Image (cartoon, rainbow, N blue to C red; front, side, top):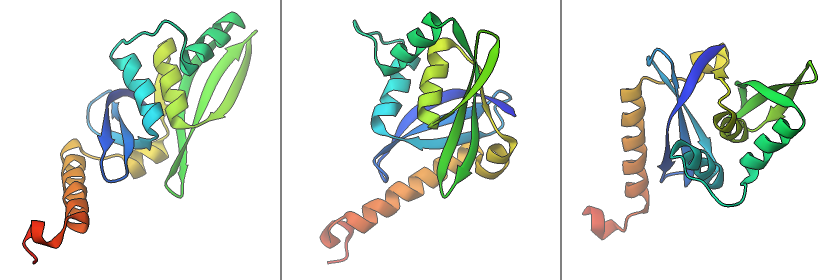
Length: 159
C-alpha cells in the first residue's frame, strides 16, 4: 500500500466531473480519480474547513461510527475495473475489524472527516499514477480537443 494525501480537487470540463488528486507522501506522483460533482464538493468543503449548521452525509457517517464506539483505521483505493475505481473503508468496532466496500469519493470524504490515513494499492499506483507535469499537459490537450470538437467552424477558422 502507498500512503497518499488529497492534494487538490478540481473540475474536468470535458467529462463534467470532479477530479480528486491524490499525491504520494514523497510527492513523486499523483493519482487522479474522477468523481461526481456532489462528492467532489463534499471533499472540497472539508478541505476548505467549511461547516454547516446541520450534518452533511459524511458528517453523519462520522458521527454514526463515533456513537457506535467504532473508528476508521484507514481507507484504501483498492482496485480499478473498466475505468471504475473501488475503495475499502477499514474500520474497527468492539475490537473487530470490518472492511466495507465503498466508492472512492465516499471513502475519501469520510477519511478527511475522521483524519484517517489514505492509501492506494500498489496496482493502482503503478498503473494509474502520473507525473504532475504530464497530467497537466493531458488536461490541457483534452480541454483543447473538446473545444475543437464543439466550437462552431467559423470560431476556429474553418468557415
